[in-house]
Every structure is written in structure tokens, then in C-alpha cells.
Length: 200
Image (cartoon, rainbow, N blue to C red; front, side, top):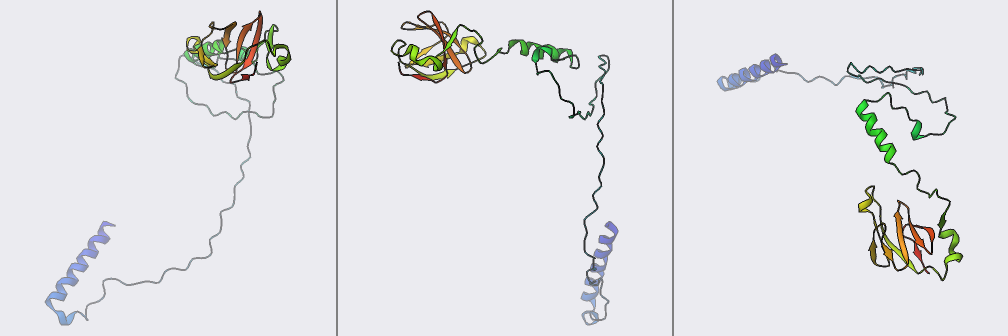
């Protein structure tokens, strides 16, 4: 490519010098280049599609803690369906790095067991409105701030910010959960949905 450019420059230079020295001889010089017709191409056709059969294999991974791990491409077998329900308690962490396995196990142990109250002594306010109408004072749950850190949880009820354990008249706030709060009123433990407005 460089030689082509160089030869073109030489030809142009020679042609320029020749035109300066002999202006009348410029018609006699041969052209340094020629214009060619654009080549004709046949109609373009798409390439044929190659179909590669996909095979799935059962892969058993052996963990070797003394050597560096390399990524392994595994095609999961989607035809098998587990009969048992997914349970974090039975999760096999042996294939993970020991430090990551400890962190995952710690996170699993810190998770809330359920968003729905599991205690049978809790009463859902939505299902028992008639029981508390006229007895339980009006509650306007304006703000609901849940955090995994219990010290940072708070709710705003009737314009007053409350934390777990605080009292509002004859109501004690027992717990702030992600989707509801639990209060104690007349020795009843009542669950109220987050941002719920109870008319009284």
C-alpha cells in the first residue's frame, strides 16, 4: 500500500514537473491512472443455516480447594423437575468458596421467616373490623419505614413518629415488619397492614 501511494506521488510529481517544463507537451503525456467500470456482482443470497443439535449432559463438579478454580460451562437439564419444594434450609453450599458459603449461610439465617404472621394468637384487623369498631381508636398509618436494623424502623401514626415498644394512648407498638405492624390493644395482639387507615 505504501509503495502504491509512493509511486502515485512520484507520478504526480513527474507530471507536474513535465507540465512546468513543457506546457505544449502536456497533451502528449499518458494518463497516470485510468477509470475502470464498476464490476458486476450477482444477486447476494443468504448463507444456509447450520443446525447444531443441542445435547445435555449430567455434569458432576468436584471441588478442589488447593487449585485455582476455572469457569465451567454447564448446560442445566431442564427436563427434570424437583418434587420437593425449594427450601433455603436444605440449600447445598458445598460447591461455593468457604468464605462465600459462610456469608450466604449468615444471610439465610438473618432473613425473616415469613412476611405473614405465623402466630395463631395474632388477630388480623382487616378480617375482624366489626370486633374493634368503636373500641380501637382511629389510626392513620401515614409512613412505614422498615429496616433490617431494628433500631432504624419507625412508623408515623396520626402524625406521631413511633418505634417498636412506643405507646400511643392505650396502644403499644410491638413490631414493625416489612408489610404490617403489630400492636397490643386490650391484651389483644393485632396485625395492621402497612399504610392502612383505620376509621375507629
